[in-house]
Image (cartoon, rainbow over the protein chains, first blue to last red):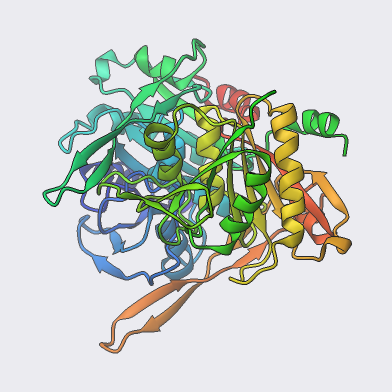
Length: 256
Length: 256
C-alpha cells in the first residue's frame, strides 16, 4: 500500500485564523499533515524574510492530533524553517492559506500566502496558495474546501511543471453558484496609490496606505474574469521573472 | 529645449547608505531628482507593504540641493508614497539602489531594492534596480556609477517594453577589469535552508536564518555567468508571474 502523502501547511493570516483550520481539515483527509505558521498576522509581507532579528518557534496544540508549530517569522521563513528544522524530508505538497481575501491578479506580488507557496516551489516542492474572496474573520470556507481538495488531489496525482506553483482563488459564493474551475492567466491590474493623510494629537502628519484595485484587462482568459463570472481561478505561476521577450529589444536598441 | 527628465530615487539599505548617495550623484547629472527612501535598513523585505501601522515621512537635507524625504515604510511603500504625496506627475524614471550586495538570480525575489523598482514598473514608470556585489558599508561604487549612468541614459532614450523593468548587477571589480554589459536571463538558483539554532541566557531556543546560495544552472546566458565572468548583468524582469507554458499542461491533465 502506498503511504499517504506528506503535506506542509502554512499561511499568512496567522496560525489562529479560521482559514488555516479549514485548510488543515481538508489536508488531514488526504495526507500526513505538519503545520508551521506565523504566530501573528503577516498579510502583505510579500517575500520578506527575517534577517535582522532571530526567530522563535514553539510547538502548539491547535489542530486535534496534528503536529503544529508557530513562529515569529514571515510566511517565507515558516517554509524555510519547516524544511530545515521540523521535517525529515521534503514534503510531497506544500499548501498555504486559505487566505481571507483575494490574491488574484497583481495581489500575488504583495501576498504572504503566495510568497510561502512560491518559496516552497523554489525549494522544489509542489505548492499551491489558496484564497477565498472574503476578508471577514467568519468567512464561510465550505465551498472553498471542496475545490481545495480537488486541486490538492490533482497536484498530487499529476505534479506540476518544473519551476511552477498554483495560485487558486475561490469566489465568495455558495457551492451551488460556483460554476467550476478555470485555468487562467494573471489579469493586468494595479492598485492606485492613495494614502490617507491624518494628523496625530501632537500635530504631526501620518499616512495610512489605502488604494483602489484597478484593472483594464478585458481578456476572458484571466483570473479576474473567472472570479467575476463565478469560477474558481487557477493560475500557474513561475518564479523566474525574466521577461524573455525583452531580451531581443534591449540587445538591439542598446547596441552592446 | 527639452526639459531634463524627472527621476525618483529610492533603495532598501536606508537613506543614509553610501549606495543611494552614489546613485543620487549619477542621477543629478542627468535629471531632476527627488529622493524618498526608508529611514532604516529594509533589506530582504521583498514586496512587503505597510498596512497594520501608519507611515511617517519627513523631509531631510542629506543630498546637497536635492529634494529628499525619509519614511518609516518599506521600499515599496516609498514608491507609492512618492507618487501619491510628493511628486506632481509620474517621473520619467525610477531607480533603486545602489544596493550593497547582489540581487542577481533568485535574490530578486527577496530584495527590497528590486521590489521598489518592480512597484514603479507596475505603476507604469520606467524602472531599474542597481546592485553592487559588495556587502560592505564602504564598498567602492566608482565603477558601478559608470554603468548606472549608461543604463539610465539607455532607458531614458529607448524606453522599456510594457510591463518590464531592469535588474542590473555590477561585479565588485575595478573599472579596468569589467568587460562591459550583458543582457541576460535570471539564473536558476536557490538558497539552501539553514538556520543557526542557539540558546538564549534563559535556556530558550532561537534561530538565525543563514543559508548558502546554490546554482546548478550551467547556461552562459545567465546573470550568474555574466557576473562570474566580469560582466555587468542586465536582466529584463516582468511582474506578470503567469507560467504560460503550464496552462496547457493543467488544462489537459486535469480534464476540466
